[in-house]
Amino acid sequence: MTSAIVLQARMGSRRLPGKVMADIAGRPLIAHCVERLGRSGLPVVIATTTRPEDDALEAEGRRLGVDVLRGPEEDVLKRYAMAVTRYGLSDLIRATADNPAVDVDAVTRTLDLLRRTGADHVVEHRLPLGAAVEAVSAAAILRADELAVDAYDREHVTPLIRRDGRFFALDALAPGHLRQPQLRFTVDLPEDLSFMRRLIASAEAAAEPPVPLFALIALASRRDWDADDGGAPASRSDAR
Image (cartoon, rainbow, N blue to C red; front, top):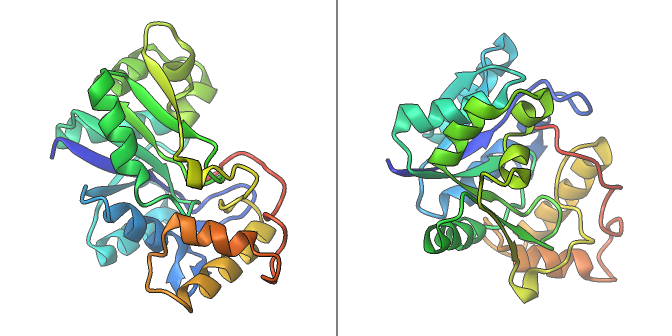
């Protein structure tokens, strides 16, 4: 493979342990991520840790028919560098396993822009929180792995690439009909999980999964839909 989606995941979330295997509409949260991302046509690789508790994620990955790569718990950047080397990647999509409503079409949009511009990193802005992915060149991942010394940069993978002038990072605007940044479609806290369970169950009662992002936005924006207004307050991802 020359391109792949590397989906970082772990059971040991600090704020909501085990959330990546939490049930949403009859399937584990991580299964929603794999299902949606896999619609791009690219292979999905689950990048998890070597901790015993993440044996469950390896088993789930096998059940879903995707590769599983295991590496350091805190050094997530190293897991991505391992994926580049193991699979001979030229570029990749970074995704996190706390986003069960990730935009199905964002993979193609960001990778196309990365390749057309020669950028090292592309991310779209103004999508609902939890709907975006990041496209990154393999060369940038390997160089960041060599350069990054700060623990934050190694845990969060792309901050060094996005801020350091030695890399070409490109910010893009999401398509107009998807620009709803006030909506929160990620799972970081118990109230997020409750919200996403209600949203996805309601959406899948009316349409076959995976339900497109625009339909989830429309449902969450309806005044007569019995859900919290946009979910819980924002906080950073903990899916490592």
